[in-house]
Length: 343
Ligand SMILES: Cc1cc2nc3c(=O)[nH]c(=O)nc-3n(C[C@H](O)[C@H](O)[C@H](O)COP(=O)(O)OP(=O)(O)OC[C@H]3O[C@@H](n4cnc5c(N)ncnc54)[C@H](O)[C@@H]3O)c2cc1C
Image 1: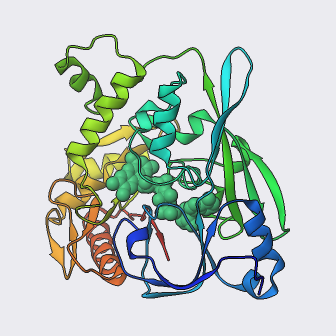
Image 2 (image 1 turned 180 degrees about the vertical axis):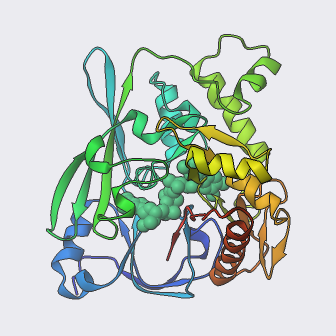
């Protein structure tokens, strides 16, 4: 084993996942830069171990009480303007930075564009994995490229927006590049011409209530932070991973059929002619809001959020998720797909 690497053994992951679920990592390494990954790759024993790349642990469910592999916890830091072409600013940021800290840094330094994604938990490095999004903006809208370490070749690779195959809460990192690429840093492109995006959710009404008719990026960020703090349970108080299921997308024909028995079903038209359905509404209609199964529960104010009611094991959350999926399938014929990775 490479003695240069500060590998820890039997490390509790309880404080490193927002569900607050106990699971012990057989091996654990804080990754401060690509040289740490190269050293893991060079070590014939470590290279063959199962790998979990860990950011803030806010989009995963630890279903086993022990992880018999190596956890690579991304802690590399740094953000800086890379270049400016007159039209846009290109900013490079390391995977281990917290996403919200990065958004605040861009606003403080006069580079708007990310304000609608204020207060999303987790790290910058995980943001492309599910193409994070909120309040009408997705990561892909301001993404330029990323650099990642490839555990197949032992080399660094660079991927642009097209390579990443971003779509709703999805990317290549959930499919063919899963367990293969470790994202090291990202470059964002933020156009200098800024237009506010306040057409989603309660943002406009919160700004109106504050008497703001011509909002700055900071105003929008503040409004979104306030809405999120009001609507979503704080993982430090009640363990959760935000929305547990993706909002399903159905064809116009399927929606028309659903409307015959459920005329109030909320639906949102998509650019491809299909419709997105609010998963939280489906779960609520099945009577799950505020209910508990063992030590796992459904948030009383947001049916889309599953919570750790205290001391839950990952398996209990997974059992609750399965029961919800079965009920939604039976009542509406719709499959719900989880957002978090099951580890
Ligand atoms: C209260 C709450 C609210 C949330 N709101 C939103 C929201 O509005 N919009 C939204 O999109 N998401 C939301 N989420 C989900 C979550 O914040 C995001 O998915 C976030 O990007 C996860 O980051 P993380 O660092 O915690 O990732 P982790 O949970 O640590 O990892 C998630 C996945 O990414 C992989 N991964 C992590 N880092 C890397 C890397 N450097 N290279 C390769 N793979 C990596 C992991 O292996 C894992 O499969 C919310 C979560 C919570 C708890």
